[in-house]
Length: 344
Image (cartoon, rainbow, N blue to C red):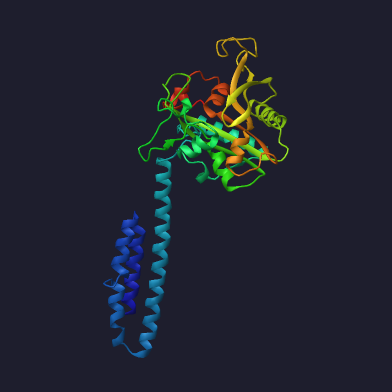
């Protein structure tokens, strides 16, 4: 039996040496070391030997099995490395070649502009109102009534406002100013908040107008707030947003919920105040409306106008983006034209 083992061991070594692939090695392993292999058949007959022969032959069989396992593994590793090197050589990548361009998505210019404006106003001490205080579907109570807008005001006509079928007095908000009322009904002064969001108006769509757009409303209510505070906040905002101090002017205007009211102009970005097509030759561009909160609005939400004063302002995000990036058509923001969007 000892001679048999040595003969099988010699044959196995010869078969391993002749192997040319991993598949050949698998066949050698099956032939000699599997349950039906030659070594296993001999081990089955160990029970017929004397105790002394069992120890001798058993030890030899175990040693041969161990040596074959080591030889098979060494040969397997050799073949594996050879095949891997061949594969790597065949599939080699030239890292000096230019890579393939993969287009990446970008933040929409309106989103980027909104984020920038919000960031600037937050740095000036304003906080963003909660979502529930700035709904896009609003009642006339918040959108008109509490903002001191009378029932016969033209803004309340269907030609200007989108009324819903949810109820007779439910509208798509025409301004973010309603957020003022939500906040002031829940919170007592001091109040310093901004409310960004979409608004809707029944407008004819053209290069300057769309039937929905984006606004950012600001409100500051506290003791001893003056128009000078309003000018200071807005001038600082304009300086940061446009990257440098620019001449501004406050023109007297009228808004039902502010008194006094003003429209704020900035020196034309395009011509530097000399007069051009963009500014209609005036040298100025309107960027927002503002004013001191009307005492009637404060009374309506339970704030004593004899103790507290405040200012409010509202700006169109599209208009500010158009001025900063010299865009002459508001419809470009909504056409999803990749040629336009990838410029930002």
